[in-house]
Length: 460
Image (tube, rainbow, N blue to C red; front, side, top):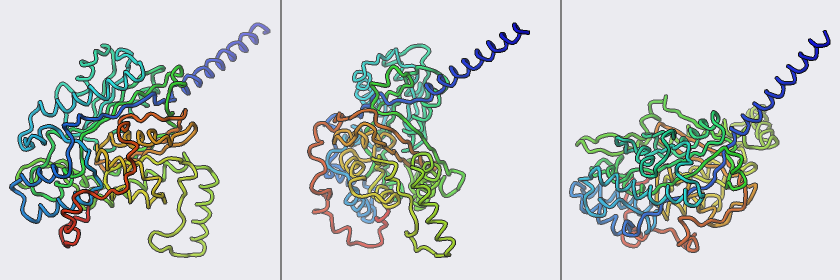
């Protein structure tokens, strides 16, 4: 009996030790560290000034005065400055005749800058990368773009490679989520997340106003980031991912159709942004925040909000539109990294979260300097914060992005050490914020703001 009891104790001790080891192992795998990232800065010969943008508009002979006036109004109110970038085929006047090589050249320029850059900055060899997740929404060649990266950088034969397409501006965080989920099953994984958009073959040359907006807002860019769950890299990491929340309201017809890649009545391809888009964005944003708030905010703030809401119900008071109790997200967030989808997007999120100008400055400046670079935009916003030396150890950063589907994704990071790398902003960060964001076209075409009935107020 004594031997049996001893064996039982030993067996239980072994089982307890195994379970403890499994728990520690799972916890380590659940960690996700941002080792570093690099934002793509295209060459100066691809810069497109507002004058050049106007010239591109003028050479589209299909446009009537109404469409021309509409586009000028969008440009005037876009919040975009003089130093954004376009694909070469557009600058060369070939936007109506894009080739496969045009699209591949745009991607190769991005890979050579951002992907090579982040590997060099971290000292991680391409063959040490275990996982690659790439997202480019509107260009999906065969072999895939992620295979092009594997070949270009000579990665291992067993590297896991995922190619995401059609996910819109929210795909950057979807790629991070996919990488994190793979890490949960594999210890010590080095993941390369690559995010961009293809502008070269997707310049709209028709006259449908719902499809013309993209030409004024979207610009070339991209970013590459290295993520890992290897604890050996923890001391070198810039940030640690604390949580990521995704909301997809695509089951609603109006939300699903809010942003659609389609042909117009004349068979010309482009992205259509419907009038239902702002409403879909608000709904998706609300869904996301309802699940995000309990995970990132202190209990006292949640209790304050709940008690005030309950009190209002008990007193049967009806709040006017925009009034009533609101959650103060600044009790749990130090920096807001918002998708610079357009001036209306930034302003809507600012009002919803009760933010001040300082909080949305990084998003506004990113829109001005780089335009909307789709899913990679958030990394430029983060880079602005870092270049301005805003990010200190222990700070909490909330990223929020929107995309077709319709989706709202958010993630919550904790800064691991004081950051101050200027990155892609290095040559211009001292010029930001500028004294004015007024577009240079305002002096020349500002009169378009006085014209009514052209639908120019909808700039998303």
